[in-house]
Image (cartoon, rainbow, N blue to C red; front, top):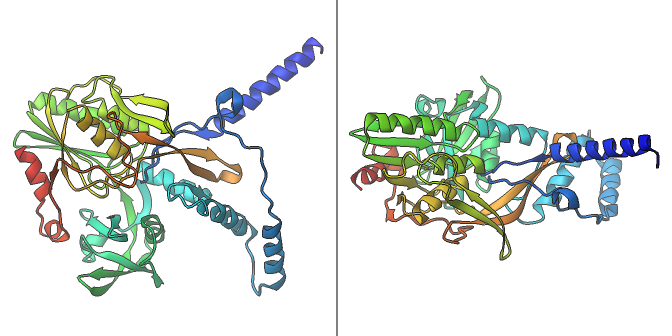
Length: 394
């Protein structure tokens, strides 16, 4: 082989390696998502399966559909639908196929800019999509939507069996358009029509009440750790003697953000381990200076606290840095790799499980609080918060 040919081979190999690296995203989806790098081949560790799937039956179905269907067929929708159906057949709620629209929706959700919405926090309660709380000054609040309302209909469709993600996707839409909801409240059905507005919820909020610093984190993205640290520094300047970290309703997000938030209390200590079977494949530690490490801390959790929220809550408790108050968390203890596919689609696939520093996996079980305090829909609608009140006394 000539020197020029060797150079061309090296260039092609380098280009291929670059393409493979660019093709991988690493973020934790909570998203309700936690995400780690997929391993790229034998060189980069990407799990690659060279096997193929016999799609002759799919082609047979397509030909029969195209030959007999009385109407227009969107080929691109069929392709996305086939991929989505195959992934759903795995039977894992956290292994999902995202078409380009779904990818954008996920990115917007993590950034807090969700476009047209009605301003509500929705979570799973008794296996049903339920309003956790309407946001302040939101169109949902103005329309009379209340915490505890179960969403059983969206725009004329029965949504009683839908997942939270499906309900949220249907509620969102263009600013200025209307969405019609059927809500179940104390066995009564209530119809409401709400005009969507631009909705952007903050990642981090903070206040100081009677010497107690209250830090509310709504999601884990690239800004979370920086914003939380800035607020923590304000707490120290103000001389607070206690901190309440409110993770209620936080569906999660990036693992690196969880490491950064935990780093306000932990000094380069283990936040979680990732395991495949009994093998530990990765250990993630806290990052940043633990400026709140000696400050008494209470963490608020509930059924909407998932993924990265559970990582932080579990790590702070295991290391003896916080007391947990509220209700049992969601229970998402799996790790997803997000892999870019052709055409702008993505595959989010469960590849391992994460464990707290003390070696506990909470998948499907959740984290039980040290002090259990319920927060009812009536409490929220009446402007009272017994969980927060209890945290202030500890």
